[in-house]
Length: 322
Image (tube, one colour):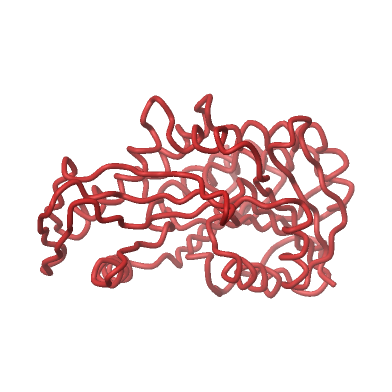
């Protein structure tokens, strides 16, 4: 049974007002956009877990294979009594690989914006790893937030950011995000991060336009969330998922596309949509190893090691703060 002295939950999540304001602001401009962090409500998180199991979606299984194959080497880099701080922890599947290999980890700190999904995943992990204190933090990790006191011996803080979620940021924003991560890790901090590599555009297009349509459901769930939480009357039959790879910009671009001229009410405000209009929901940038090392260097990190699968689909980097 879980020892509650070794499990804590800190709720710093933004409330409904910040979601409402982001939607109002994002749909009011000439180029409509809603931040991708709002894709991950409880339903969105469940759908993303389904995406990770799709045959077309290579990043998850490839990164897991890299972590499993190199777990001992990674654990040696992290050292004994480390504190793992994972941004965007989701179901914490990949953290389990690390916790099984690590030498007496002092704490695991999963940070995620999806409150109930985080609470459930963190509680389950605390049950399975009773010797590793789990300190869950529900917060918007894209900006600064206070980290609670962490228990145990004073081992190093190691950031863990798997899944190539860094690709959701445009490069300048990614550098700011990494600088914020560096501030939270503090002097002597280190980071393990998954980064999707540039590759055949056909592989990328298939990964974000799966035949089962789960990615489409995940994307359109954002509008379902607006209807659920913000008293919206968006007609989902008038929108579709639209995603493609821009080779010139090195990124997947994901949108919700309006299929007709129409209007909708959201939290008491009326918004107009034109046929063919795109509402941007997510980018997913892809990098070469050299490009990402240069980006990390701009945030104060220096490379220690990099692991890549045989197919050269995905990379896992280990960095140390200068």
